[in-house]
Length: 253
Image (tube, rainbow, N blue to C red; front, side, top):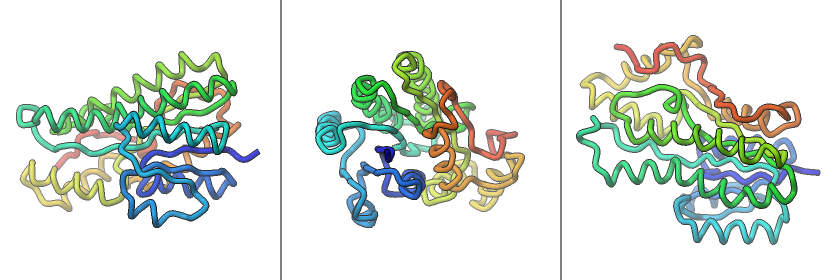
């Protein structure tokens, strides 16, 4: 039987790569994303919802439709996130803090909250949360993002404990610097904050890993497919870095 996979922020970036990877394995895919144009560009056979992952009412309605259409949920990839501000902690507004933590952490919590009852009733399921190497280390000028991604790992550990007796596994993927528009913007802001050239920051991100390169969205998607497979049937409660082995979390210039 084909897996039924729900992916948040599934229309672009890492989420789109996950959706493509699961679909290529024969899974049925349902994506949620805030970007209507990106959703429209996705394959017609994918189910889709436009929503903000912090909107609990919209999420509850999505799960009602999912239960009506699918009747089960094999895999949840709670992947939605935003970079948040790049600034010293004393220059970070509470509004910026709350928005970043809300999308990155509360979004993962809400989707896990609504996925858990279905998975418990069917006595099976896989929950994959997208954290970050920022959830394993501290990073200068990224207090909201780092705090949220550490929180995602704590949420995952709790889900693994609570849901394990129901044959449900929970893990977190911790990507390193992932190639794409979001990292481009992070690098631009970091370069401005530190008074260095953009290319210096980009090169420093890659040089901070043993493999000396950035991560691709496909690298993350491949790990998600593995974690959702029977090959990983006893892998749970783990924060798994896909980062080329971080040696220096903070870029060195």
